[in-house]
Amino acid sequence: MPNRSKFFGVHLAVEATAVASKIAAYLATFIHLTLSFDGWSSKGHDKIYSVHITTPLWRSFFVEGLILTGLSTAGDALFGYLSDVCIVYLFRK
Figure 1 (cartoon, one colour):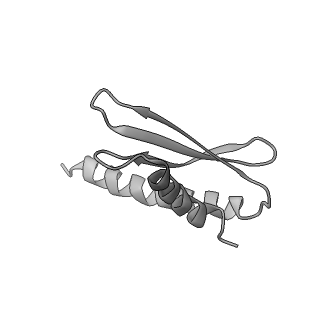
Figure 2 (cartoon, rainbow, N blue to C red):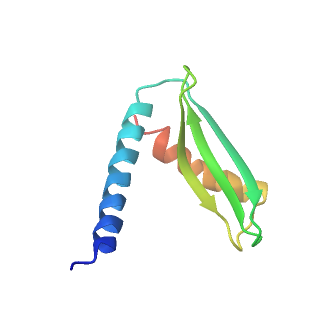
Figure 3 (cartoon, rainbow, N blue to C red):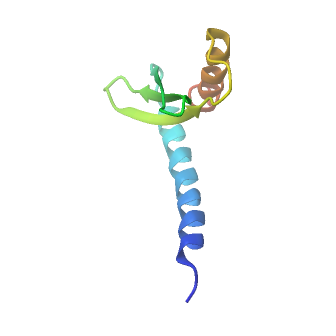
């Protein structure tokens, strides 16, 4: 019997990439968007951030998850990570 877990892992990665591309194309149709992020620490002391983009009609999309294990979470470092998200999702026009 073939190993189904290998198929689903590859299939899910392809589908997730396709959805991310469609979300980016959809968000590119807007002029005004809101970028928000929230951070917390896990029990293992990982610094975890979720990044969302919200449209003017309050549709919010999770666009990035940042796990900053062993990396700086100072303002300059977070600005760099969030700038990368902006480049991918907000400045594609």
